[in-house]
Image 1 (cartoon, protein in one colour):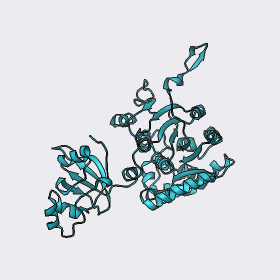
Image 2: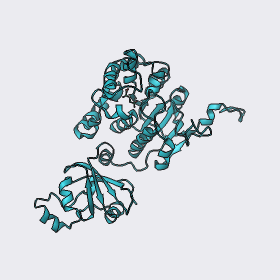
Image 3: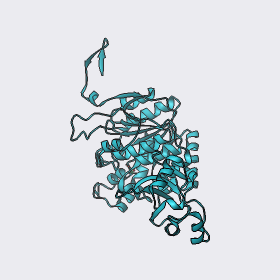
Image 4: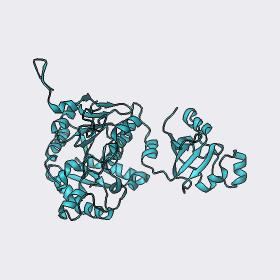
Amino acid sequence: MWTGEGKTLLKPMRAMNEATTQVDRYQRLVLKVGSALVAPGDEGVSTQHLLGIARFVIEARERGREVILVSSGAVAAGGAAQDGAVRPGHRSIPEKQGLAAVGQPLLMAHWNRLFDFPCAQVLLTHGDLHERTRFVNAKNTLSQLLDLGTLPVVNENDTVATEELGVGDNDNLAAHAAVLAEADALVLCTDVDGLYDADPRTHPGAQIVPVVDEIDEHIYAMAGGGAGTQAATGGMRTKIEAAEKATARGIDTMIVNGIDAARLDALHDGTVRGTLFRRAETPMGARKHWMLHALPSAGRILVDEGAAEALRRRGASLLPPGVVGAEGDFARGDAVEIAVQANGHAAEVIAKGITQYGHRDLRRIRGHQSDEVRRILKDAPAELVVQRDDLVVMREG
Ligand code: GLU
């Protein structure tokens, strides 16, 4: 807002979509820069928007903060280098993987040119996050890179991973990086002003939501579906998923329009000009968070309403009598979803946990008391199907 002598003189158009909120001081920041900023118009990497972003990174470091970049744009850079042979929107997954291999060094060279300190390339896949040893290795390396004074630049290892190239998204990767690095802030830098309360393309009166204290279905509904621009693989939905992961671990998450460098600069003083998703007051423990967000589910255990109630409200473990079914080919030690099926309703997922039984054994012992379980399965591995310590309840009642 432009003001003079305490009075508002003129309100620029953009201010309509602007809201400011203060955020606590942060020390370690993960900054995710989307393809729309790295490679605008799908013409390959460009400095058009990156100069302002680089200046922000330099100043943050000068102020004693640690910064990790998560940069998209490998596929876009590769596509442009191949002379646009395969146009965006028509690329198969193997083509995108090839283009990422061509583009990733170009992307790194591009970032390197903007800084006087070294950039360090960190390529991650989902496997690195859910396999505990690799998770710990990646965590140690990131911390080492910060100690060395480098700027880690993280991207998906697209040449070997297909999940992200299929559906998006470096937003979720950035949340994982923030958790790995034990950051206290995650900034999703994009080409929109924040989360709108309705789709601004169809609702001209849509307003930016300045602060989100709790992420629920209502917030997801605001995000709608699909990606904003062609170069970007993610959309608002993946940003909310990322915010859900990061805030649960105590990391403030922000969506900021990086085309307007002043909005990034405002972050130096803790002013968020965009949407702030406030961190959880009581962060989830590291192991439970990893189980819930990094471990993929191999199947699903269906439970009755009594068991669901005990899990949700009484902090109980899951016992065989409460199990009514098992879906998927999971083995002992796998992570599974736990869902309750109320009469005639679709199953609702209420928890995630590590199962002591594989799907075949579980189908045999479901609904039985423990003495019967031992009769049915002589070498029954455990009394409990899922122990409380191996269980994360999503919505405690
Ligand atoms: N990893 C992809 C790339 O660098 C981008 C994925 C995304 O933008 O979410 O091209």
